[in-house]
Image 1: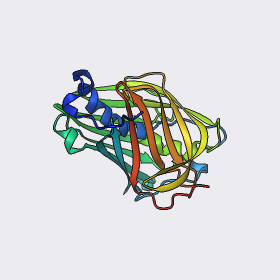
Image 2 (image 1 turned 30 degrees about the horizontal axis):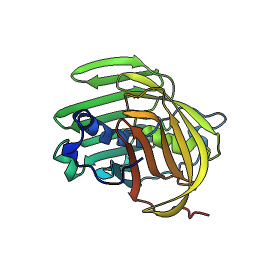
Image 3 (image 1 turned 90 degrees about the vertical axis):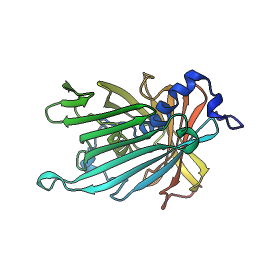
Length: 275
């Protein structure tokens, strides 16, 4: 839960400050949640809730401070052989008060096959404090392999069918997960040289308030049997609108010190009103 008063970054314990930049960028990753398969329907049979030109902007709060601004966009691009493809672009930038201690300037791009909703190619430009890293994944979905380029090293590793990356997974989940309590999807996300099993489960229908006004939402619980990727302690909750757009409007995750909350502040036309 957020504390009642702001905490100065220079007075945060050293270990917590050392992890802060990772937590800020992790929020961007948390918003891009995973995919897999769902019984009876395929992406080709389902109407996509997102569209080219969608742009969602989030304020990321930690210890009652606005720590970062995260943006997710769906951009038009040309695919080979007239194949429908979109570029998913996610960015996370630390706010001035955080930048003084741990600047974050991250960018993720994922090329998404709009028919299968599986990624073809992903790049991650990570800039956190003094750490600079460029990561590239090329997904060979039909062959069940991914080629990863990181730190000057290239390797190919096996992946399950329908594997997602940290960007494409949210858009897949928005499409296939029914807004029914107790509905769930098991999924695989490839990240950091590992296949990550994740379950996304619908918990309840809730009406919540924010910059968007009042909206009826589907509260989703993301169950992850590991902690290193998102710096989270326990599961993550995401609220998406209970309409045809399935817009993620809020995310909350407990971390080592306090909680991270990401709220949508721009890009919410068409949200359904609460009942």
